[in-house]
Length: 389
Ligand code: GLV
Image 1 (cartoon, rainbow, N blue to C red):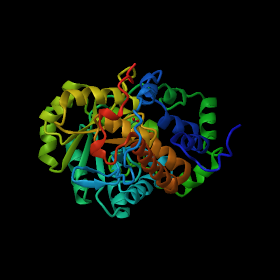
Image 2 (spheres, rainbow, N blue to C red; image 1 turned 180 degrees about the horizontal axis):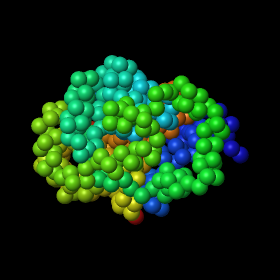
Image 3 (cartoon, helix red, strand yellow; image 1 turned 90 degrees about the vertical axis):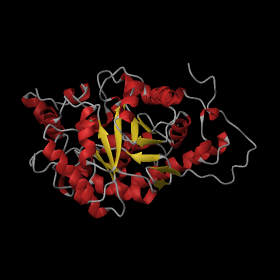
Image 4 (cartoon, rainbow, N blue to C red; image 1 turned 135 degrees about the vertical axis):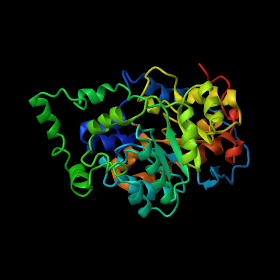
């Protein structure tokens, strides 16, 4: 018997609501991964395989989920990951998200390819948010963007290094995002919009203007996933190497976090290049399908590099319990991507507010039942030693 389903309880409940509300191509863009989505599935499955060790009869009457990251004291070890085109999933989604993040006392990271630009988000924010950057061929534009980020108070830059090219995502191809549509295909694609009226009103009517707010002078009419891909092909610099971090350092004096690390040698190179932190990530299984899950890579890299840098991870986090497992595996904090945009697409800021509250409450339960009362106490001893298959 299915439950009444009156209130979304879990991340996947928000996913189901987002699926109903969004045009299929937008839902699939968020939901999908590269090729057969093996890594995307492994990101989630490997969290599920990771067993915890229940402990009882400890004093768990006072529990703190607080964590400090880059000098910021946060309510929990979580940040909202940068998501391109977020403002196409819900009205001015980046503005709603920064408000939800502040309310929950966690960082929000704005994507280079967001719909709302740096200044619009800053106008809604009361605290510094993070900014994510891709290296573009036009270094002058990169420098200007960083100047804009600094001018609005950003102190932490997340530099994404795993998108030298865009991964092959079959769902986007099937939905006609890569072109190749027949006249009938075009009609079917166009029909997605009027057949999703709640989204069409919220985003299509109330959520304008639809353009990339940080790139408006470069691509004033762009707004679609196809436009994003064209821009990546034209503008992303696949020749970028660790040497370019030196240049980046010369134009950015804030915190520098390198996102997209999946191997120990790359983690070491990032540290040697002067990173303040790394994000262990396979880009949510959207880039190189068949690589290790993020939680597995987190364990491997943390074992190899110890405390050499601040370790964030993303990919597969679907609950507060997963956050505790990630911390036990060596991460200082996680980023969530799909969960926040599903909640936002489903219910706007109220959805994301509720999701973040749920994650914190779930962390509390997991900590209480593993006998831990603060983040520093969470380590491999709370994992069942037989967990690894
Ligand atoms: C962009 O970063 C994407 O994964 O589509």
